[in-house]
Image (spheres, rainbow, N blue to C red):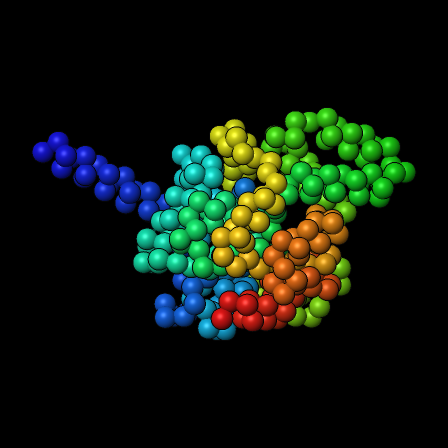
Length: 304
């Protein structure tokens, strides 16, 4: 009786948690499976889902999108935002869609999660694609602040702001937040010369249902930095381990994604190999919107 009650409790607990995760699949389960991991903390998959998921499925992929627990449409006030929890969410996606192996497509901060998941569960990953994904976080922050000092060298107030950021703990939510705020002031996340196609994608997204569900939980970064000790990582060595294990790694970045230095782009190209790497012109952080056709072409050529 006791063991039965324990089993029943575990089942109820699993089902309760399963309800917390928003997910949706596009395409046929018979096609090559791709799981999209969104950025954050405080991100969601609405932009990718609203602009690109179905078009990637039309290329012959079974595309699964989801919002991590406590983020976006997966509302959960009790979420801790740790990597352990992120792995539980991702494993839940595997269970929900009856997957044994899948290709991981990881964007921005999702690259950290995708990389660590691949290291811990290599048997579940067919390939890892880093799309504008973080991999050496401190290098990114250092690059942002270095560029800001040069750009705002004649603005005493902004130089003072940069000095304040540099004096913050590098393992804090405030440090991360203020680095990215400075990056935004320099238009580091903005496509240099928007094309008619990219403008239309943005307009359609902002006029559609996915934009209305673009919930951003501002508590997510605070919880992440409070609960997760691994919060400022350099995954270069981890990526090299994954490559040596035989799991293919692909990387696609915007040449104008200002949060990455030229050195970082060269480093990731060296890790994955030049045949597995693409840098896209006139393209910033949200490359699947900025240059969608080239992004889809890269995915199709490498994962099919």
